[in-house]
Length: 330
Image (cartoon, rainbow, N blue to C red):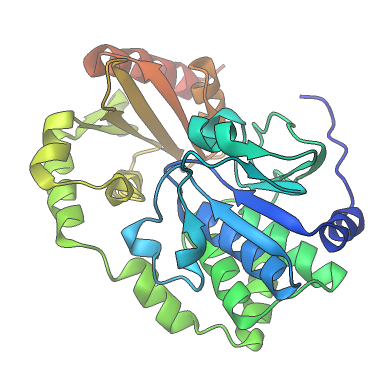
């Protein structure tokens, strides 16, 4: 990948100050970093007196509706949204922003702020830092360094964005700077215990029923080094699963002693017969981002994903073979 040239934080801030109307957008099936980052930007722009709309192809996950400003997020309709600036956060490709959002948005200027190594460098202005463990960390630096609004509500969104993408400040890539930002947010007045309860201790019962069903499908292969499970359409329907319910469950497999790579396969609804793949590694030497790239996906070295052609059984065979190759000494 060629060396990236980022737009300076100062120039991005200047563009934000100069424009009047904005749309903020992130990837479909949004997680904590996507929603937290979107809301942090949206609230900051509102505090500057700007007109802003925050869009996502999907609704805010039930488990994230506690975030300040979550009611701002809307799904696209038929209305064309023309604005001065579109800001895409935490999304590596245009395609993952969603076809409906892309169809209604119109702007002469796109700003792309992200932390994925696989980012396609779309947009007119870009700030992409693949060393940052979360897009929320990039946004804190942007707001803090340029004097843009950084209120307690904005800080709460940034904290959840960082916390969810770092496994509560545990994953590879979490640095001293990440902890320093956490401390700065606490000094700002962010209520960490309350946010932690709302983020990690408030799941619907159906999520636990889903986990029980997934554990019944789990297989341990490659001499105990790979754990995988399959989320079939039937299991999803029987548990009443919402898309966000599977978020983070893969870490249950990664936590097993001896397991190096966890793989989650999910049948997606629709005539295309696609399979959603999520991979997690707990060994920096085993780069699951490269494995997913083989199947047209991407992400990070320790966490990545892709969408494959089905059926699920055949997709699983192909992926597990690729994981075995990544585990083999070169």
